[in-house]
Image (tube, rainbow, N blue to C red; front, side, top):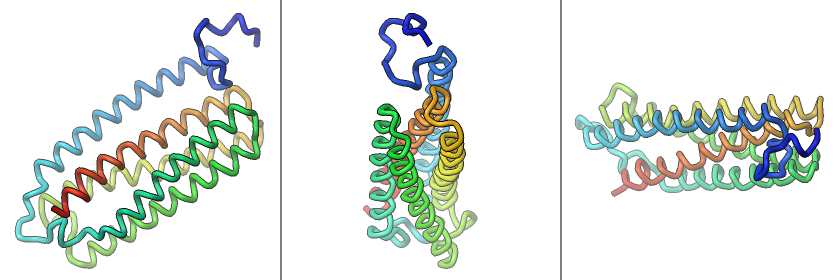
Amino acid sequence: MASSSVPKGTPNFPEYQTEEGRLKIFGFWVFLAAEVVLFSTLFATYLVLADRTAGGPTGKDLFEVKDFMIETMLLLTSSFTCGLATLEMRKGNKKGVFIWMITTLLLGAGFLGMEISEFVAYVNEGATLQTSAFLSGFFVLVGTHGLHVTVGIIWISLVLIQVAQRGLTPTTCRKLFIGGLYWHFLDVVWIFIFTAVYLTGLI
């Protein structure tokens, strides 16, 4: 594509090199804004319900520092490796993209596995969605984030299949970039969960 077709001031990255790519990236930012509204609502609901334990277990009774610290390290590390994958994509290094993006997915899967184990342990202790308003808010908020992580893993995996078949084209680069944006967004949401749910719950 001729460089004159790219508006002045547009980043010189492959994902921005077509008008379709630029519009879809902009559209994804709009989608993320809607996701911010969704999670803001869930956070507000959780914070209202956090003290309503109905005589059931509290966060202090349930939360294990070691577990949620490991979950946090897994997800934050995955954000770093996702960033490295984006850098390799912009260098045109397909092998580097696969190395770092697969590492990202493995770290994400590790996080998801720990979160599922955490939920199962809570249920086995009698802490279920129906036990109290606090636990309802907790499971819905943290579970919604976990569902988003699951979607992210599936989504990025499908994009990697396209990269394997078609190479690093403006279209596949755009999809990789958007997948990376989504993943970083989930990491930011987790930082708020880490602070508002787990750390606050131990006080």
